Every structure is written in structure tokens, then in C-alpha cells.
Length: 392
Image 1 (cartoon, one colour):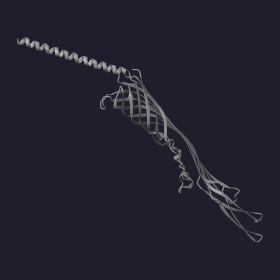
Image 2 (tube, helix red, strand yellow):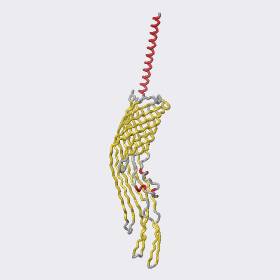
Image 3 (tube, helix red, strand yellow):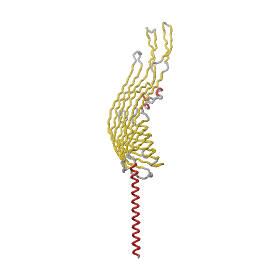
Image 4 (cartoon, one colour):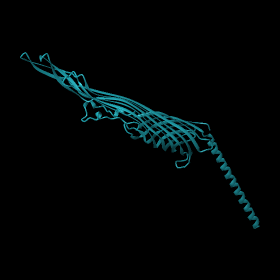
């Protein structure tokens, strides 16, 4: 009897284990089917289009000359910044686009993206101060009688400062990347975390043109010219001044290609994927670009000193002329780091994102005039994009 009871208990235990195994397998297959179904509904192609407004820095540098920094500063220089009027536009406006492919049943992504921005700045500042009328007083003796007459005369020249510049700048950044959703699970059920590796190409180009002239102050020199054996006395008043001019023509560029690595993450704040959700997005990127810096510079400075000799009909100008021209090309390795943060509203086949992004390229541009001098290039500002999912 005991043996029959033991055999029955063994059969019951086996049946229970078999039923539990079948149930677990069925549940696993059911969940797998749901996952496959969800994956099948996911778009396999995402197209992203948008625009940005970025502050730029480091793409060029102002030219200077001694006449721009006279001390004490001439009155006519008030309100005229010779270097400030040579700066590029504060913002560069542009567009961006990206296409991402994610095959069904895979957590790998392939993407290609482009960002393009440009700016143009044209500035003209003119200030002029006319000198007060110059008085004259002439006394002479004619036929034994004293004679005197007085008056005033305006000079034909005025103190002035004039700056006229144009600066254009453009930049292009291309990214080709392969990424994998590492699924760290650190940011919630609907979060994502993707590591991307690939190649980045960057190009920066700046052109500057300018004409600057300054006549810091006007002085006068009065000469009395006698004629007709001393019977006629004529006062001649001539302006004396220093006048400077500077012409500028500069082109600078950098183009480089190199490996890039980035991390993009997203965490859901409210909502769900089916009916729409609001997410917090962020990311960081780094690259090492191997490329070439180029600079072609030409600037000329003229100094003209107008004085008067004894014979006022033969003014004596003194001139100085300085002309510099340089063409430089040099290989460079440029580190690049950047990042972004923003918010997105996401639906199964549509997404809208806004945020703030920054990218810095260390020592990317040769901004020197007569000798090489590098400067960091930076772009940072708000952006907005719209993403459309296709396929699935």
C-alpha cells in the first residue's frame, strides 16, 4: 500500500511540473510574440529636419594698427570701435537633417546627419567733427599809415573716423554613425540609451573685407604772404593733419575628418509611446579631427602727414606705406567636444524636439594676421527638429 501511494505522489508531482513548464513556455512565447509584434510596429526609417540659431566664436580676429589706439583718445574716436566693427555676426542661422535606419528585430541604428550654418555682417560707422573757424588778425603799415583787418576762415578739412567692413562665415558638420541601444535601464521603462561610433567631417570658412580711415584731429597754420613790394598782405590759413587708411582682405578655413563617439539618452516624463509622451533628452559627443588650416591675408596701412612749408603753395606731404601679405597652410589635429539637452514630444511615427546644443573645436582656426595664431571655434544655441517615422 505504501508503494502505491508513493508511485501516485510521484506521478502527481511529475504532472504538476510538466504543467508548470508548459505554462511557462506558453507565457514566454506569448511575451515573445508581443515583443516581436511591438518591434514590427516600430518605424524602420526616421527622417529628421530642423533648424538652429547658434552663437559663433573664434572664426576670425580683428586687425589693428597704431593709429587706432592713440592716447589720449581723440574726440572723433568716441563711439567708433575699430576692432568691434570687425567682428562677425553674433548669430549664425542654419538647417540640419538626419536619416536613421533601424532594421526590424535589431537594436542597431545607422545614421547620417548634416548641420549647416552661415552668417553675414556688413557694418559702416562714420563720425566727423568740423574744426571751429580760425580767426586771423593782420596789421601792416601802408604809406606811413597803420592798417589792420581781422576775420575768420573755415578749414577745408575735418577730423573723421570711418569703418566699413563685411564678414561672411559658414560651417558644415557631417556625421556618419552606427549606434546600439545598450538598454541600461537606468532611466525608466520607456527610456533609451544609445552609444554611437562613426566618422565626423567639419568645415569652417570665413572671409573678411574692410576699409578703415581716420583723421584724428585738424590743426591750422597761418602764413602772411606779402606782395607788391610789401603793399599787400594776404593771410593764408592751411589745415595740418595726420590721416591714416587701412585696407583688409582675409580668408581663413579649416577642414577635417576623424573618428567620433557619442552617447544619446532619453527618459520619459509623462505619457506613453502609444498615445504620446514627453521625454527629457540629452547627450554628449567627442571627436578627433585630422585636417588642414589655411589663411590668406593681405592688409595695407598708409599714413599721410599734411604740413605746410614756408611757401604755402607748395604743401609738403609725408607718407608712410606698409603692405603685408601672407599665405599659410598647415596640418592640424583638432579635438572636438559637445553636448545637448532638450525636450521631445514623441508619438509612434512622429516627434518634435527643442533644445540647446554646443560644439567646441579647440585650436581650429588660424586667426593670425602676419603670423599664425590659433583660436578655439565654438557654436552654441537653441535648435528645433521634427522627426517622421516610416516603415514598420
